[in-house]
Amino acid sequence: MMEQAFFLILAAFAVGAALSVIIQRSPIYSAFSLIGVMACLAATYIMLKAQFLGAVQLIVYAGAIMVLFVFVIMLLNVRKEENTLDKHRYLWLLALPFAATLIVEVLYTILKVTSDFTSLPEMAKRPIIGDSQSIGYGLFTSYLMPFELTSILILLAIVGSVILARREKE
Amino acid sequence: MDIYKLIEWVVKIGIVFLILMHALAYIVLLERRLLGFIQMRLGPNRVGPFGLLQPLADGIKFFFKEEIIPRDADRVLYILAPIVALVPALTTIAVIPFGDTINLFGREIELSVTRVDISLLVVLALTSMGIYGIVLAGWSSNNKYSLMGGLRSSAQMISYELSLSLSIVGVVIFSGSLDLAQIAKEQMNTWWGIIPKWNIFTQPIGFMLFLISVIAETNRVPFDLPEAETELVAGFHTEYSSMKFAIFFIAEYANMVTASAMATLLFLGGWHGPFVKDFPLLGPVYFTLKILFFLVLYIWLRGTLPRFRYDQLMKFGWKFMIPVALANVVLVAALALFLF
Image (cartoon, rainbow over all chains, first blue to last red; front, side):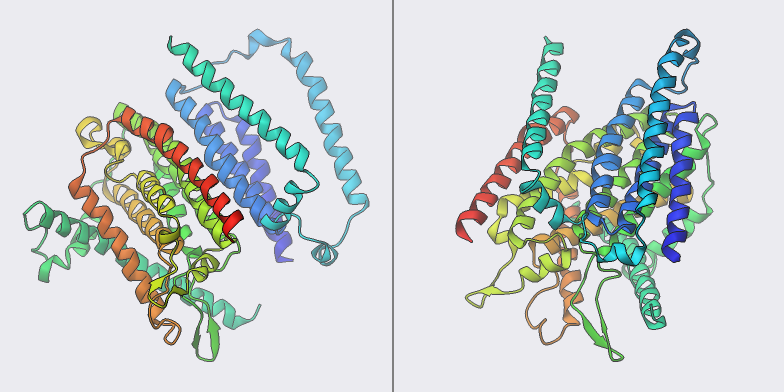
């Protein structure tokens, strides 16, 4: 009962913050709303007993990536977004199909999940999937290949960014 | 959940909070007196015996100062910033264990506000949230110096957070746990009955990296670039006055306590010391003494070292700290694989 109440509060905060990300005119407010969304997501993970995921969500997304976002916004010193949307009216044509796809996707997932809904006590009996042990085990056994490929991809990205940064200097 | 558990929690939170707030006030006094001693002057010694009531006087002064909000400041973020700085700084203390379980009124009581399996990650996550307080303060004040302070702070935090996390990886590999209490317990025994099995002896490189990174993360000398007074007036808190200014200071000192507690738990064996097994209440005493050691070290550094230049700071972080930290991870992993 208490878990449900907490979940509803968190969900409300998350949705509110997510709306705020796109409604705010000032980019810095949008960025901080996004941090709010991520903090709410992390709390939801922790409530689902995926503590490791929750902590990593905070460290990586809210703690590291968003600092970069905020850093760039501050560096450019953007106070308020100018209304440039009118010039890109054709973007609406692109935005509609994308939004429709996303909504259909979400609806499909919701319908699928609610159809094989399991009660909380039953969920508790299932093996935990979000703690450090199970994630580490998964990464180095069944998902070793994707894991290594991703790390190569990230390494390439790092090398690329270093090269780009050096070229700018000359 | 039984009612006794709830009472236990409330009592623990109350005690830890009270001790922490008083300790923070007296760390400021310690810093001022010790700096005075280093610089061959007296320091504050007028209020009460040896200046012991100085924190009280400071507190009263802060409450009665005029509160100024710059006209063009972003009011919401300006007021939010000190709160964002303080809340994570104080919350972090909740997961830090300061002793083993003790037996009180027939109940086993764990000496930590709450016990989390991944307390190490929780501490890292919460401290990385604390940056936003400084960044927000710098942004919302509408002041060049503040903005520069905020910018520097965000760049510095990202750079040194990497080497901080990497330096901890070695300890995690050795102890096989992300739980601070468990990590401390792994260091309980001794070699040949004299030398304690502290991680500082098994991985000195990791310890040095951790110490340097953590000083940079807490914005202390020689890494206090965000508030470099000779070039930035006071950096991110230039426009803050009264209690809001004080809150930034409380947050900074709370972060220092957290950092010292982390260093103690990860590398100096936490609350372990002679006779702790027989008298568990000695644990918190040792723990406090070790934290005090690191705090004095902080102040000592402040009295001794000049400040880095900004490009030196960045170069040092990216071109020295991170490569060494990476090499240390490889070294420790190899040792763990082949020796244990």
